[in-house]
Amino acid sequence: MLESCTDNPPPPHPFIFYWLETTSITLTQVNGQRKYGGPPTGWIGPAPGPGCEVFICCIPRNMFEDCLIPLFQIVAPLYEFRLMMNISGQNRGFAYAKYGRTMDAEAAIRALHLHPLQGGVRLVVRLSTEKRQLCLGELPAGVSEEALLNMLRVVSDGVTGVIVREAGPRGRAASALVLYSSHYTASMALKVLVQAFKKQFGIFITVHWLSGSSKPRHYEREEVGALAYPGPTPVGQALLTPTCFQSVRAASHDPHPQHFSRSCNAVGCLRRVCELYGFGVPLYDVRYHTNTNGFLCVTYSVLVPGLPKPFCGAAKVFPCPSTNTMKDEAHHIAAKQVLKAMGHA
Image (cartoon, rainbow, N blue to C red; front, side, top):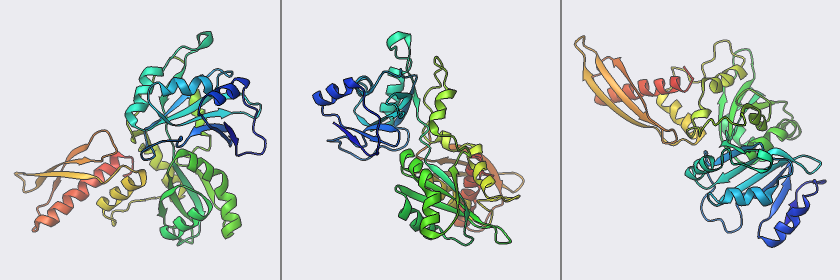
């Protein structure tokens, strides 16, 4: 069954009709892509989190879902499959397959990367970046996170978190980082937010991807060689690069930006960042060792559940009269170092 959410969808390939009639598959045409599932009929369980989607490219232009979906369903049940289409009805050479678990996505990469197709072509399959963060600029000075969150939910779907960077001196505009539940909801918001804010609230804002680039995600296919296998990226690691956070600071137009200032406790800042990216609550393991110079040497390990391995390090601190105060100071130092490792000094 083929459904349409656009005025002039491209005609499906002739073989698709027969395949749809002989299976229970339903495809939905919307915004330059043809989608299966999200979730499919009979899906049991929660929506997949980060790390469950694979990016597929080098797809022959005459290959469609009747070949691709059964191929990727061999690995595990599909939560969603999206084939990018152009106006003439050809596929654009790339697609996205989402599974219910990260281990299924990694298994698909191992099983189907460089899978041979007709004419000697080989599929390229790798973990999708699943960008979900948008940067908003030129916001009114003094806008609160709660107010902005309510405004965003009026004009877009899937908003899960907001961090506002307060306006600078002389009435400088504020900026914000917005997290969406999926790349799809974020990309849809990217298309409508500027006009929606103008129409609904009379505000002229700027919107771009967190990476600082306005190019669509499918450009990542140009960075993949036909025989190069970059391997699965640890969940969340690609989201926390120095460039990622530098783009937030650059968007603020502040010559001395400090998104997480020293006056704000680093433990709280780290927790907010982890909540924003869906990484879970950081867990601290701190140990103290006496130093001959009167300092305490603190060794720490901070486990962020959504990242592949803990952050470990050591630092010197002054002894504190209160055990709780010393513990708080050690946690602050550890959290500060983790934020720095994430690219935010």
